[in-house]
Every structure is written in structure tokens, then in C-alpha cells.
Length: 177
Image (tube, rainbow, N blue to C red; front, side, top):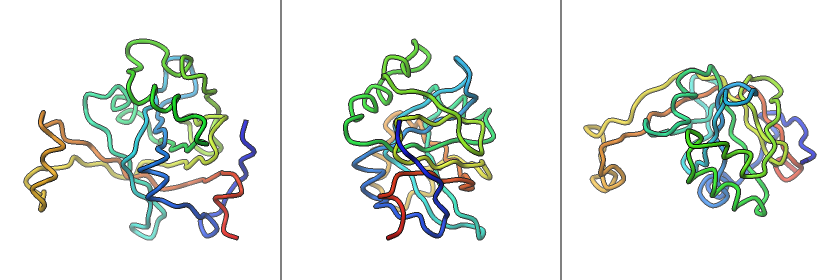
């Protein structure tokens, strides 16, 4: 269990490119009840400010099991983990929750979030809790860089979910010094 403490938006500090691209995160949506939530590993995402709100953006392809939960849930969480959980995140990113209890197989412990209904994980070193405020689909006619299309040979364009960040908790490394 990580010793996470609440972090104010103004004191949150993270190496965002490393956190998303190298460390990965778990995107989780649903309710903290058996078979009422799903999680998946993500390495795409954004954090920033839009409409004067702190926001996170998560991307999900329509065939992913998590997509169903993202559509139904009013919120989601993003959880980052210490490096020793890389194998668990790899499993959660490659297996589908449709096919069994991948969370139990991963060894991670689902936990209640502080302000949203979607769960987080006890082992996470960082949890970002979000209330969904907008969603849309990526549209290939708006790709300005033609190399983007190679990510979509099946034409299964991601839906993105914009969430207002309503709570952040983390270990000391995520607080401004």
C-alpha cells in the first residue's frame, strides 16, 4: 500500500511525458464492485487546463472492454505505479477483462477513490480522479500529419474523454519542492 496524500492542483508536479510514455498508467472506470469496473494500461494521454479547469484526457479504442465502462461511468481514474509493477501493467494492457478477472491475475488491489466512484489501486503511487466533462472521436479527415493514419490500419479511431481533475493523491515525488 502506497502512502499517498492529497495533492493540490497548484502543488502537483510530475514528469508528464515520462509518466505517460515510459511509466504508463491504468485508466479505470466503473464502480468498485466485482465485474462493475474495468481497467486498461494507457501510454497516451494529456494533462492541462481547458475552460479554466484542470483536465486530463484519456483515449480508448471502441473495441476495448474499458470503452463500455467509460461510456457508462460519469468519471474515471488514472493511476501510476512504481517500476516494480511494470509486469502487472503489461498484463492489464494485453488481456481483456471480458475474458476473466485480469485484475486478480495482476495482483493489484482495487481501492475506493476519494471523490469519484471509479476505483483506483492501493499500490499506485499517483492517482488522478476525473469527472467526465466532454468526449469526442478522433476523425481522420482532421489529421494534419499523414503519418498519424498508420496508427489506424483497422480504422478503429480512438474516442477521447476529457475529465475535470477533481482530486490528486500521490507520494512525495509528485509534490512541488
